[in-house]
Length: 259
Picture (tube, rainbow, N blue to C red):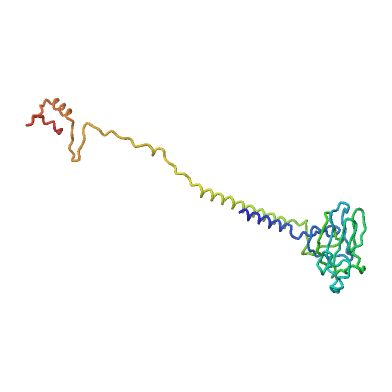
């Protein structure tokens, strides 16, 4: 159960953080993390590194050179490769106010760099109808803006459109509730299987049955005859003024205990 919970949370985080390499801002496109992006560019390609005095790290981005140059011809340019794939060229910004492939100036604490298309020592960039692909390799901890650029439709982030984010949050919440309910039900079934309920014993059933006194002055035999004790027989005869008959053996007839 815990594995599925972690998997659901990781999936939600991945969906929420997808396509966030860059975002549109008022003055261009702000780079957020490393990765590949497609942009629509103005005529001039330029970058701004904000608050350069507070920056830690450096900025490096790879771009596609003009397709008219062969690999041997590209190798002669100063910014060929340099941490980028062999068929790409690089642009680099350092907080120490140095750069590769860019002409730089400092403006109100921001570092501004512009690509010079007329510079023959740098790889000519490929920009078909203003569209270009870049790969961000390194980013400092301060904002880096590609001035005047806009994200292509497939890479655009629309922070103001929160409808999709609400659906993602709702889906994650539903998955979390279902997983939690599954854990609770599983725990209940497990406890129930481990501990069986004890049988209820009626305390009244433990009381032994009352032994009734069946002793009486007379008892009945299996053949239905009634026996009396000798004393009661004599008392009865005495009340009736009857002498008990003598038997040959000299005993009265009452000695046999029958009447």
